[in-house]
Image (cartoon, rainbow over all chains, first blue to last red; front, top):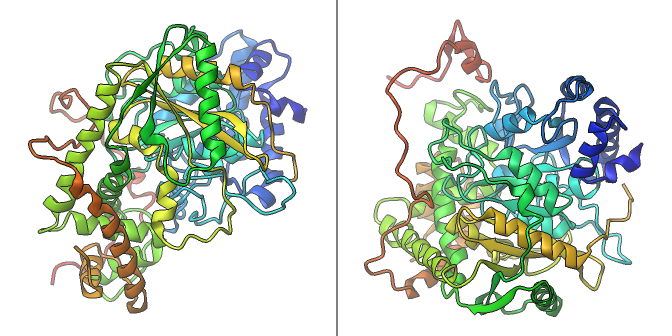
Length: 491
Length: 95
């Protein structure tokens, strides 16, 4: 039974449809494997066996009648940022401990409508602020991957690290993530999985814990490019409850995976060759260029001159929006409250004890850049540079159909790696953050292994509303790479 | 620009976060590290550039001004740290 778990989402839904396996058997198997992995990987933060089995039974009933949606009967993991009705949702923060939403996020509602089965909530960096999954209030997630000849625990990346670990370890058939600066693509690259985000507004943010609203993109983490397209197909679509939700029809993402890339123009920007980048990342990038050339693409040099300003811009806008969004955690209406001498003291104690160090740092930074006297110098300046970065992309997409870059500047680092200052952690997102700033589609596809046997990813970025080209080029890279490596089971 | 520990104390107060005095020094250093790093944005010419607050290119949707929700008091109160007889219970805020 357990080898069923190594199937792709596309293959397992075909087996379910053919009644070669039942949704209840599959859910049982996935739950057992997920629970058994907890002491070693710690990828999950909440289970609800009754809910899982109820959903699986409902899927079996539909499948028996020859009905069922895109995801019918497949157990899927949900990042703890998404509200699942009745299941504890904490964004991996102590301040939300015990919070059980009485509503369902739009993204998960759409997935359940397509027959997806809730497996468990996955752990993340607290409020999605981080690239290592070390700031989760339930302890860090351990990557299923190990460097050759080493037993050291590695980060699965972050912030969607629990989702990436769960997919990579074959504990589910796909997972949701959210990507604000790279939080889907970086963990996907670190774990040999596929991570994608669409155009800003393609997947509704309603019912997802708000972090930096103009940068937050829900999206899937999956085993294959096609699986990621199936998941995004289910997650995407207009949501009248969300004012920035795209009104456009959702294209056929799954069909796009089979599209020819012959004749496409692929941009390569020298600005993505950063100082101190390991040679193997550079070599993989060149390999990706060669693969796409062989597939009939034309490679074009493009320039994105404001790339180096993307991270500093992000670290003004992101904390500014986060400090506003996180003002709601006041201990009055939901979440934890720490009683103080008076109202202000209660607020301060609640937030001082409920938020972890990185969350506090971002709120303070955001409060500062938005405060009187500094607003123009920092926040307004960043908003203007943000437009410059968008213009870079618009210019480039006047010449090319997609841009190819490495996903991350390194492979996964050790969980005990010391970072002397917060900026070192921020640099993980150097290649991914630009797509959030511009609000455009981007996917990370596993493309090779580094010298110590750890996965590396390549990223494809396309213009707004053109997820189809993203999936087509992603699938072409996947075909050429023939990436089949899996972590050796030790958990 | 850089911040002093006094600034950080003031910002923490504005953000309603109790920061223990012994944390202030480290926080000040961290924030100053980040502020120095983001100063490179000064190199970018942003004269006559329109600030970009969102990637959304369509106007905010409008709808008829009518009630579409409600009657969910118990749901709203379900996660309250303290509630009584259909109300949130909060510390006294008016003297």
